[in-house]
Structures are given as C-alpha cells and as structure tokens.
Length: 117
Length: 117
DNA sequence: TAAATAGTTGAACACTTGTTCAAGTGTATG
DNA sequence: CATACACTTGAACAAGTGTTCAACTATTTA
Image (cartoon, rainbow over the protein chains, first blue to last red):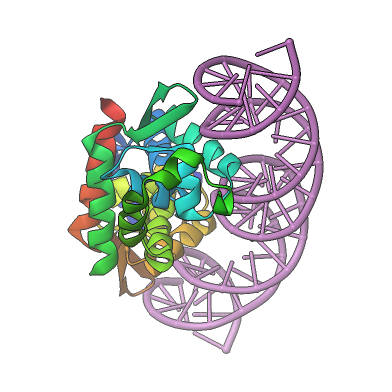
C-alpha cells in the first residue's frame, strides 16, 4: 500500500500530509517568485541594479561603468523593466534608468547580508 | 575625444564618473550575490524552500508533496545545501532537511511582497 | 545474509540563457 | 536634409541548467 512511490513513514502521518498539501505554494506563485529571483541571479544584472541603487543613469553610463557593450546592457535592462525592477525616463536621445521601488533595494541588501555571514 | 566608446555627455561630468567607479560592486561580490539569487530563481527550488519554511522534511516527503522524483529533489537539495540555504540531519535511513537560517525565509517573504504589489 | 528502503550521484539530453553582431528606431545637430 | 548619436531589437551561438535514467551507498528489516 504505497501510492505514488512515496516513502512509507510519510503516509503513516495522514494529518501531516493533508496540512502540508494545503499550505503548498501554488504553481503560478512559485513561478512568479522564481522569475523575480532569477532576474537577480546574474552578475551583470546585480551590477546594474547595484549601480542604480543610489543613482539614475543612462544606458551608456552603465555600459561604460561595467565595461560592457551598450547592446548587452540594453538587453538586460529590458528584462529588468519587464519585471518592474527598474523604471525609465526619456530625455531627448537619452534614456535614464532607476530602481522601480524599494523592494529591489531591500532584496539586494538582504542578499548581501546572507553572503557576508 | 571619447575613450571606450562612452557617450559624450557622460564624460563631461568627470566627478560623477570617479564617484561611481569607486562605489562599483566588486566582481566577486556580484558573483556571490547572484549565485544566492540564482538558487532562488527556479520554481522547483522555490517550492522546496517554501515547504521547508515551517517544517523539517525528508527527501521523500518533499518529492511526494511536489509530485516529483526523489532524484530531481535530491539534486536540487544538494545545490541549496552547497549555498548554505538548507541544512540536513540524518536519522537512520532518513535525511531531514530544513532552512539553514532566517535570511532565506526573509528573502522569500520579501520576494512575495514584490510579486504581490 | 539477502532484500528492501532512503537517498545520492554522474552522464545524457533537451531546454534556457547571456553576449555578440548587424540592422533598425528616433532624436538632435551641422 | 544628411549625419551623428543613444538606444533597441532579432538572430545566432556557445555556455549553462533541470530532469531523467541507471547505478550506486548506507541503513534497516526479514
């Protein structure tokens, strides 16, 4: 009697199973959450966001600072934009980027905390 | 007069350049930080960590709950272990996993906050 | 001691991702 | 109007990732 190939000890505790199944994170929520973290899960994007923590910068400025091509930075900024991690403002030819909200900043700071322990 | 192919407006403001270059996040720090976020940047791992937020569970329990193979879960747990996001405790044949510290929990909660806004 | 159980591991595979390159916007300048 | 500039975009490609499968270890049970 062992459905799903589950371990035996587990199925003895039916109450535990039901409780955990209910508390389980939904498929969509898990996906949304992972997409946000995935966006922070690349060195280039971490550098971009870190640079934008205290300053509003144009694409070219970021590219120069990180010693990367404008194209590469632009691609990454689009990804960050789509996830509402950064916002932008146009001024003539220039496009100025900045962090979209305080959550991003806090997430980065919290990541540093974990890394430094 | 335009080194590195940088935009023209930028190089006018020398003070700004120097200040930002100094504040720039280091290569190693950016990599470490991105590795932590990358670990959280996968739906399966988000589900695993979410499940472990309130409970200590064995590999088989997690696999059953998430309806995935024990092998797949074990592979992901190793990754999370290496990054000190989860810890484990052996008890006979069983291996019980739990979150390694409060930072992980806070990171997840903060991610949810951003996702829900 | 043999079989069953819980978990780990390495190789293989399809799939995803980050950068580059070339071509394309749109705005300002001569 | 033509050129230069700031930036965006799509295609292409190498490098990386997540799951499966089969083989493995270690502990318990018959």
